[in-house]
Image (cartoon, rainbow, N blue to C red):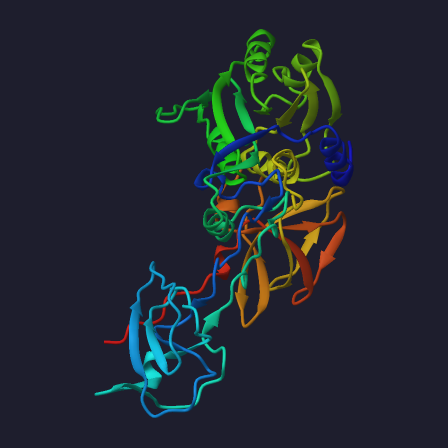
Length: 407
């Protein structure tokens, strides 16, 4: 058996960056930009009004009334100099005309029969966004290796981009093994079960930003297992689930070796997820995950997801960890680190956590009822109200509820 951190290190040293492709900006959301992006021009491209109001020169003599010489809506501009003592009505975003250096907001102006009157003194230069105030030409606006979020898309569009260079998504083949498995939608009889693992793993691949393809179920024969494994090698990663332990019909590890694969480790010092192997076959990483649903999903979180993120250019590849107060004591009497499924809540800025109950590696409900994994070391106890570090599988619980509707 290998230790968890050693297994992660072995995997990460044998996975490489994907190639680069150009995609439209909306397709790039959540992906990693592969090249630095520089600004081709200033933003804004000219001094513009930050308010609906009146543009004038702060150097004009003090006067009671100002004549309105023109109107500049957004999208228009005036090239003629504004005369001393005159103002120009201007809308937000319109370029400041020659001869003006200040804008008085509409709400600070009083209409008169002679034009307008300023209600208050105003600081010279007020309410004007200067050229290049946001971005200057040639500025580095998005660094290579950054995650493209909605704000990066908006900035890149404003600088003329319609597509961007990003690392390719990882394409992941998912293979289930076992004569007892039925495809989704079937009516199971005694001794048969629905193949849920392929779907939960495919959902994990999607959530991590990859593209999954379910390539079916391999029956419990060496020949069928090898045939399906070969089919999966046309993808960037192959995940198998089941058939990797020491049973009479567990053919996955031996099939990989017989096909020329290099099995880099088999069995990990963890619970659940011990019967897992990692191999390289045809230069493709192969993750042979356990057949128990929770064990397969936990092993994916610990090993497959970080590898996928690394391959797609991410520099942060592990889930966030928080310190939470336990609302119940916990104990691990075993000799392996135990990933306990927990429910984390947040109140008044303090995280708390409790077990989801049944911790069987076959109980998917123990995952659906939780949102985190607490790593409990061998022969260890954690007392009630003690702090523990928990890996968050999702952060939806941190979102706020809508305000109460008043009737």
